[in-house]
Image 1 (cartoon, rainbow over the protein chains, first blue to last red):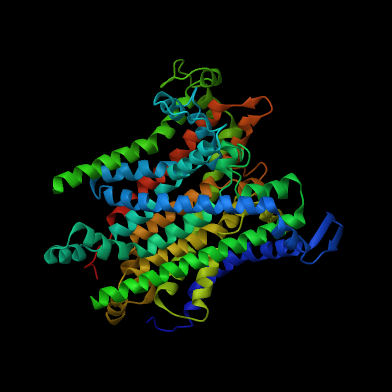
Image 2 (cartoon, helix red, strand yellow):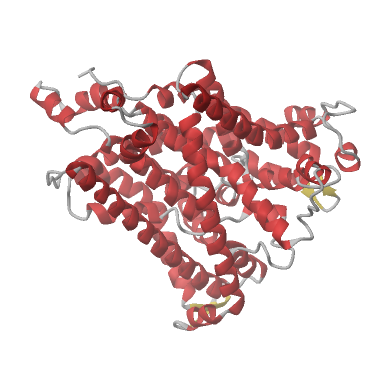
Length: 294
Length: 270
């Protein structure tokens, strides 16, 4: 167990101040908005939990939430395994390692509105490489007209955009495994899979946890890319939660309901992340016990 | 057997790199075309090679100052994030203290807030402080999501280092700062490299906060780019050129931190 040392708080204090400065005041402001009807900056009426009740009953919101859950789940199921595989197959040394590292990271560095814009052209059958290639293969592909195509395009775009985050984290995690572990495994005659399962995976647990949580919460708040690419359509096939929220907050400029909405939104993400976090924690401890006993 | 596995890996890697590079190639391709050519015909490379978009960006101060502004606040932000996160991550990975688990998780919850509605409170806060339209304002606002990220990443790497190393160093008479800087930090190079890159990246591409908190003097490139969308239609070519140029600083950053990321664990230095 870790030793108890209350003085460690001094090490955490700078972080606490930095984050609290920009987190707590804005959060309080939003809570304040969420219980008022703001007619103009001078005229406000206290309405209690009315907005919360209204948001919870909103049918469109339920639809957007379901779409959002499906999308985030798909993102995790594709990006996490793909990222791990990519990290495992990236060369470890030499100029190849550097080159691959840089190429893999490129997609992360493009501003999100540009990502959407590029894919908007890239996916078009008449002037875009992806669209034209699919058309040439005989696939009837049209992301502006077909709901499935639009959804898949957003997913592939997200995979293209964010798998590198998982891969880079895993790659760095893999690189920090001491050689001694691999040598021991070689002496034991462990198979490749055993090395992955009992050495690499447990050692990557820390970074994988971050990768899963980050990808989950960021995909849950995805906004710019689908907004630029499909504008939420066709119909509302790619209208995810944050886009619906922004329509409310900016489009109708209804601060009270929008604030209530974003608090509920925040609580949903918080709850799901908390479940994911604890689940992965417990997987980790199980693992440790297994290794200790077996 | 090993040979075949090796080949499979290489094929997978090459396939992924192609998948990663093609959209970027398309963007670069678009940046050398004129708008008419982008919209009228399909071609794998520019038929009428044009540097007009790049010329616009490099000669118009409102364009290139965007890159400078972004670089300034991103640099301030990354340095502060890593500096404050290092000791905190050490505390979280080595000690238990009152509320440690709660604070640790609370940090991450700050990344879970949908930004759209928080814009107005941020605007009010920074106007009150008189920091509007300064690089510091954006750098401070971005701490909200970068510090938690840096703490989490660094904590993950620090927890992988056995605690015996700390104890041996203390027995050898190292003071805490000296141990931390000369022994511990080199061991978690990979983590510092990744954390620094991610801080850079998230701050670099963030649009909403950066746009809200600046108007002229500190206007970032991501906000300048939204100019290419206007009533008369999209200026695809300039947007593609600007997008291509936004990759460059980040690619340089990762080129510099690549050794830290790839070097890994150097045991036996203690």
